Length: 186
Image (cartoon, rainbow, N blue to C red; front, top):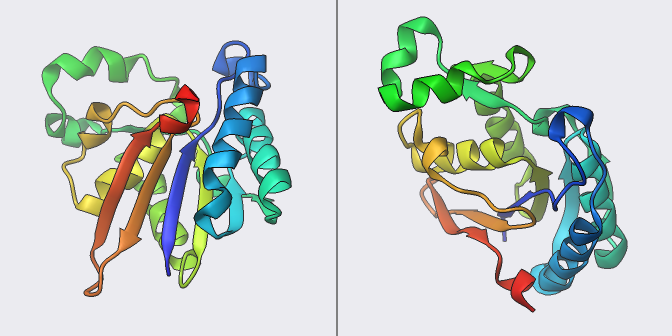
């Protein structure tokens, strides 16, 4: 059965601009996450190029016995409207968007949309785990549901959380869960 399990990386030790490693808490979260996914029948783990995503993937790969592969399409990005699409976002979000580092801006979410297409093409007839970042996970959920451009801003995605998406018989995607952290309360 096709399933996409989206994971936000475990907790990092330091500010994201320095590409930090996982913290001790993050290592523990990744271990708990792997235990939770043991029965998932995950066949492959993809992760973005940032250290915290790679280390989360490594823990999962080792404990689940799955191949792990880095891919640039799961890089940390923030959808950012072009000037002509700024009205797609509420005015109270504009100051937040203006603070987005230029190198992280994904104009109109075009790169994330392409990444979503790549991910769905790779997921055919298998369980695929993709480890990435909060705004990417939220954007993927928005694409799956055909949500408005700013939907990702309203989806809080916790560290080491599970978001699961499955296709339905007629081609649409269904979101099974978003930001599930039940495994972290053990």
